[in-house]
Length: 333
Image 1 (cartoon, helix red, strand yellow):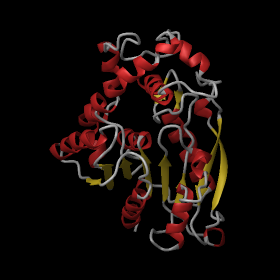
Image 2: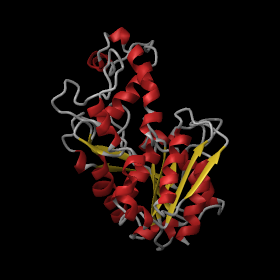
Image 3: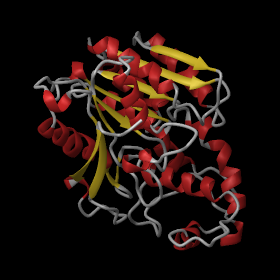
């Protein structure tokens, strides 16, 4: 299918000015408009899609002979009438370490502010959007699902509809298991995260063992436990040589865990028009368990939501976006 409904906008992220990692302030953002947009004067609902770790923006436009990318999927669904007409936006919140978790951090930059203060106003100013929460949704996968839930907690006046696909939660399971792997894999770097990072921008042709697990852990630390006084700009929640947990830092991480903060934001979540959550039964990061714990708390707090588990893992689950987009379509109508 052609991409005649997809255009790429350059958004200047004023909120990202002088960000600590020196990442670009200008971001290229794909926008999918509905069929007939250019010849009508109609206004449309908007869906913001937050990609998973190391993804977002134009990186979601990669093509494959075997599958469609996210913009193509949305274009096809609208063209076929399987979802209602909408404006679909894919922000770019990537950092040098791979991802921002869509939060504000003194180690990465103000990416939550970027979405709320830069991206949403730009889209509402340039495109014919229906400018209210009842016609504005946020969805995402993995880190993006986490971001969607956190934005729902913090900005219920902006987003009335939320879909969280395999979002990070219950950090004791989804991150803790990687700590021994990271410690062992930092061995060739003298167990020094600083040394690893000094080599990361120009990795050798043969990357070290478990390099992605290392960089993912460091990226999470840059989001959850920034420390400008640290050599690397953030603190790890464990000793990089022994793996012992540093409890004071871990407690800082838990302040970002949806399972641990949901009570504080119960009223915001109760106000949602749509809250859809799903996860694969075989998620490799144990997020199905975190989601069960989280959704149990939602039920206890009287927060309406839909939770589904499907036969799959953490990867190759883009087909599930069709489910949430159809739910949004019904809610918008």
